[in-house]
Length: 212
Image 1 (cartoon, rainbow, N blue to C red):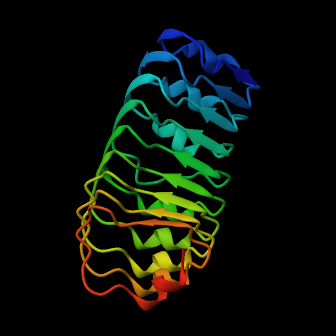
Image 2: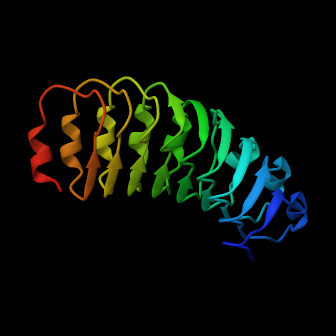
């Protein structure tokens, strides 16, 4: 366990961390680290939790992190990370994937739909484009899902109604169009649902009035 949360540490990300081959958890959140995340961090084969939120990190997220099968939690939120997420994401044990408030571009990878243990997925406040993959409907363990504040277009896939464990669902601030899928009425555990500042149209499905 390496925990340095909430200090005034800064400078380049300490690449020597990659030498700690038995490291299972690393938390450098709430500091002032700058520059890229070194790709060598993905060589930590026992790493289960990587938490780097609220720093000043930039550059692409190392592709190897999206293949680090030991990861249970990956939180890189509130940085300036850029580039496109890889099309092939292999994180079979991940439960929390938090990438909000960065500068990520490109489309949401359909391979996210294979992350069977995922409970929290937050891609909000990036620059992601394209439509929501129907494959996300396979994330039946998901409890919280947010894509607010992106550039997503197209319609919401009806498969979203398969996510019956959702308690929070946020599509706000995206130019998505089309009707609200009637299948959202299946989400009986929902406590928060937002379409704020989107372009969805049509009628409100009757099932929504039984929610919230």
